[in-house]
Amino acid sequence: MDFQLTEEQKLVRDMARDFARNELLPRARKHDAEGKIDPEVFAMLSELGLWGLTIGEEYGGAGMGNLELSLVLEEINAACASTGVTVSVHNSLLGAPIKRFGTPEQMQKWLPGLATGATIGCYCLTEPNAGSDAAAIVTSAKRSGDGWKLDGTKVWVTNGGIAKLAIVYARTNPDVSKAKGISAFLVPLDTPGVKIGKTEKKTGIRGSSTTEIIFDGVELPADALLGEENKGFMIAMDTLDGGRIGIASQAIGIGRACLDASIRYAKEREQFGRPIGEFQAIQWKLADMSTRLDAARLLVHRAALIRDAGERVSEAAAKAKLFASQACNYAADECLQIHGGAGYTDDFEVERLFRDARITEIYEGATDIQRIVIARSLMA
Ligand code: CAA
Image 1: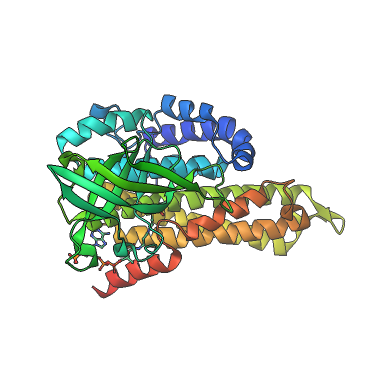
Image 2: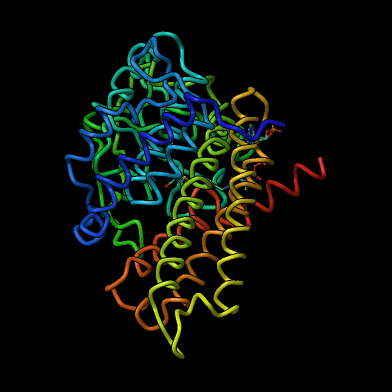
């Protein structure tokens, strides 16, 4: 087994690291406070090709794989998790399913805009009564002329307020059991009948946009259907397999930022006449944080390589997300503890990291959902 990155992978990681340190880190607090990402950051992500990292070169993307995406997401998230989730969702939850399930015409139509960031993407699965139980969605798409008419409300849509294109999951056959009657649709968000609803005020990742989206009698052409009719739940789940690798990479990035902040503070802060980093109690915390994050990175890179090899990655991605999000929250908790009272104020970045870390155990499948996916795979 080769644990070394190729020269190209090191280059893309270092490019993302420089961008994250020089451009994102100085803006992270502002993104959090203002509830939005600086428009200049969107332009820089375009210039660096990070919106289209995994989109094929023939469509204007960088043609890279999930491992490269994971390396980039770790760097971005170590600086600004709001920007991190925005880029992750765009790449893994919209670019990827079009690439995997789209017709040549759909790819030609949508991938070039997604690759440059001219079109930002979002993923509409969750509904008020269908969160962890995703197959319970009630948004409907009924035949209308040659096309479809879409009605329903989606919630917790990451990028909802900034996206131009959504993948929307809707029930196309109400007469069959839950997962079997769902289809996927590509919906431009300037279509009449689409309304962006409430913006969520979140505990963390506050710079990212999370909204409700309402579809009220939205007429769609026949070619809005992605993949086969009534096979959309499989697309939703396959897409989340990839997305979970992205969120696991986010978790490592946030966790790494917590570790770095803890090391810095442990060297600076003096108590009982010496830096607190000289106490074994603090050293053990640092050792455990680092070990868990390294183990998480191995699981995440393994999952990315399995996905890139074209094999089913559900179990490996769920393990990566489960472990990485827990390692991240452990690191955030210990980081705050090491900072003591100072960490409980907004004088230090740990307060933001602690809030950002928490979502990694919730979205793209909560921790217990990952356990379900893993256990079902073991028992199959
Ligand atoms: N790939 C391909 N097919 C899959 C699959 C996968 N990963 N997972 C399931 N399927 C197929 C199954 O094989 C099955 O097909 P058959 O009936 O033909 O055998 C069908 O899909 C139904 O599968 P299940 O019986 O497992 O479905 P379920 O209703 O029991 O649900 C679940 C399983 C794992 C709990 C699923 O509902 C789930 O993942 N829930 C969590 C939802 C989630 O992660 N939401 C995140 C929202 S997006 C988000 O958070 C983005 C963001 O903002 C950042």
